[in-house]
Each structure stands twice: as structure tokens, then as C-alpha cells.
Length: 112
Length: 110
Image (tube, rainbow over all chains, first blue to last red; front, side):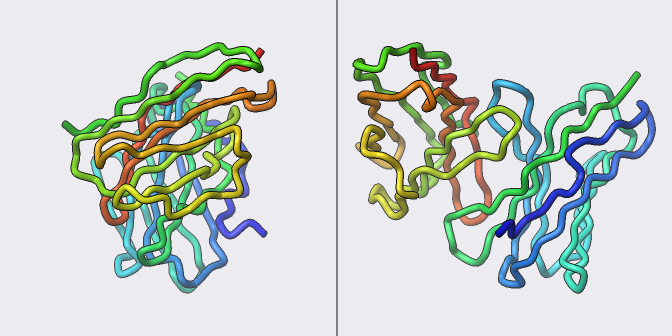
């Protein structure tokens, strides 16, 4: 049972436009959510996170929105740049549990 | 120092070889992890060490043997691997909910 779902395997966006990556979760015990970016043959790089007590967190071009009632979060990248092309993973964590639960990822292509 | 350092970056080994992967962090994180990742898939958790003690083993075959010599080091000993074990092996550390990943060891079993 996939507790963290990224329903779009891929997304293509024009440079300069907004990229919106979506993530849904089923476990209401999750209280911390993270987005990671991964280039081929490299480890995941932390992008941005959000605690369940917030509904928005912003860091430069990256903003994460959390809708707890819908169990949905989204990552907005604006403006998108070709260097943003990578696989983006959504992950969730509950309390002090050391185990991150990962989505399957969305491959973002930003076209010049 | 805000990094997790993994060595080697690439490793090719035969099915009868014994090798070790190494991971080091100096951020004072007391939880350290081994993950395995296949192309374009999310990382799969293998082991978790908390305060230098093994706290989670995700039913990993015994041909993978983790070791945590001290709070900064994490090793993964490999023996009698199979070709299907070829993957990117990632080390991570955390304090609270913040995780830092290394860049991984690309392992090929021939």
C-alpha cells in the first residue's frame, strides 16, 4: 500500500514558467514532509520541508504548500530553469520514526 | 562540515569478492542510514543505526552486513553478492527530521 503517492511520473515545463509537482498521502500520522531532488547517479539532495503545523514554506524559487484536510502537498518552482530537470521525490515522516516513506518520484523536464 | 561522505564512488566486484562501503559525517547526527536505490526509483531503506546501535533492519539478506564503529562512521560489508544487488548505495544521517544524503556508491556486481 503506497502511503505517499506521486501520481504524475513525469512533467514537462517551459523555462521561466511554473512547475507544480504534487504529492498525496494517506497516513494522517505523518507530521513532516520533505522534497528531494535527484540527478542520475547521485544521491538525493534535500530541497525543502514542511511541518504539519504549517501550510506553506518558501525558500527562494521553491515553495511547498500543505493541505492537511486533503492530505495533499505540492512543490512549486518558479521560475523553472533547465537545471531543475531531475527526479523529485516527496517523502513523509511520523513523529520520531526514523523511517522516511517515499513517493515514487516525478521526473521534471524544463525545456529551454 | 555539512556533508555525508561516501567512499568509494564506484565499485565493481565479483560474486565471490568481499568489499566494504564507507560513510562518514561530522555533523553530530546520531542516526545513520543505509539505502539502496535503483534507477529512477525511490531509495529503499536497508538499515538504521541510532546512537551507534542497529535499530532497524529491513529484512536485508545477510550478504549485507552493516557496522557502526563510532558516531561518525558507518560501514556496509559486502560478501557473495548477486548481479541483482547492483545499485546505488546511499548513506544518510539525520538529526530530528532533517536528513542529509551522501552522493552514493555505484556498485556493479559481475
